[in-house]
Length: 133
Image 1 (spheres, rainbow, N blue to C red):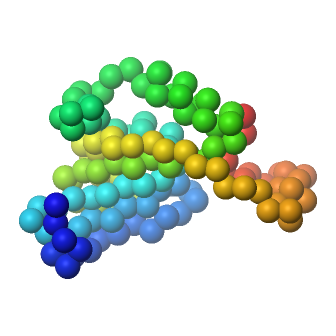
Image 2: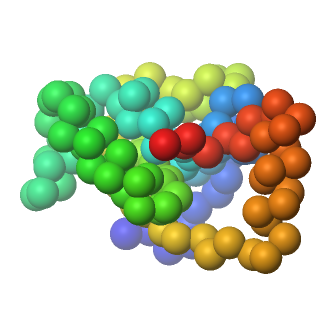
């Protein structure tokens, strides 16, 4: 594992709600592009995944993963997808040959002022960016 001081950020794609991910390319002992974002965007872009032993495998049927993601969403969990690629960043597109790392969920407790704000946005026809289930 490289130390932080041994890594240099050479390119990045800042998060943008239009494409729902961010990516950072780092150079050290090797070059990696690290991707995080909306789980459905990250997972659908993966060309490989890591198995339980950390070995790269060809993509399999993501139906089970999508069911698990739907269950977490139904429990009011926010989902984030993490992945990486050995391909460099090119513009604002995800690199090719992305390997899936993780999808994790967390609960962001609602603040009292959130409900009126969300209702106002919905009435105005503005999307929230969350899964509507």
